[in-house]
Image (tube, rainbow, N blue to C red; front, side, top):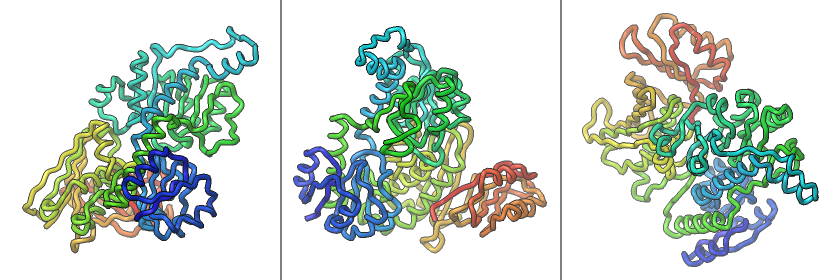
Length: 527
């Protein structure tokens, strides 16, 4: 019988579900790291919330562990790469606390607009300072929503109901989805300029980290109010404090902080700031929902092998897995390539399968393409939730299949339609197992992807390769491989360069400034 440890506080109903499904369960909360390491080797599954830290050291001694289930969406407390390396599946429950978190953001906005916490403290002290607390109405104000996914769209819907004007910045929000929500899709700078209130609902990724820094805050309307119930690292706290001290930002309401638990902060003690201890998911209903979901998912995995909401493992049957395995890497690379060269809102994605691959179960492959496509801006996307995320953003997804092969015995082509252009990238398997890019935007090119790459679209003119090589060499960046393709002599050309070091923004700007360069982009792929 599989055995699960619940190491954080979960609903008692979760224990019942485990037992009903034939899983033995122990509940031991409040464990210190050494105490967890001492007993984790006995368990097949570990059910947690945010308190337990599943580190590389814990995983190293978890010799029988097969699955970690996070009751909630964030997995900041789980070393997912280490879990993957150890063969441990990491699951979360991404939709169980959406309503609760959205409602907390709305509550924080009300409290901020009417200075409720400070007024409450003053009244309890017997001061009756009625003239001191002059709030503002939400009616008719403009709310800027940064990140209009699952939670952000619920906040937007509630704000529209409050008769607020809502503007949203989200690269994955389609015009049609924005219209359905009753919001106006804008670029970030315009949102900063127009919003009376700004609320953040985006995951913490390299693209979103410090999205509200001093430069961004300077672009906001004087008197703006800011709410963050998403992730602490989205805001540079020192820059926010400076903006509050200067009066440019009228107030802020924060449920999350860069360092948690936040026992100390430069933001504490300021009446302009409302602080709560990461309560976004803290309602009876949300706690119950995520606890039941994680128990059901973990039980199904341990008893039947079913995989739901896994962050590091695709949902593939035992029969299909051997056939699909080499194509999974190719699909992820194609999606990741398309996602990194796509910079405007996505409208549709078509995945074309030709030759041998067309005879396989391609739905998992399409999900993996979507995962790669969406992952540059969405930290928790996986092949299970990628189709849901695409559907929420009104991104149309289609598959086409052709059994007959053309130039290659097997081929996958990804066609991405954005608001401004169509992007295509195609790949095949060499020797039946080695992924290769064979076409980019109708230009034939054969290349193996590596960790650090440089994608350049240029005019096919003499001297380009020499100038590019010199620029990279002067910056101390070594070229590993160099792949070229063109439609015809003197026309459009593509260079795909594998380098040994990361290409920084400054070097990328110098490359972009070279003669004949139309566009340059630094790409990254998992090694």
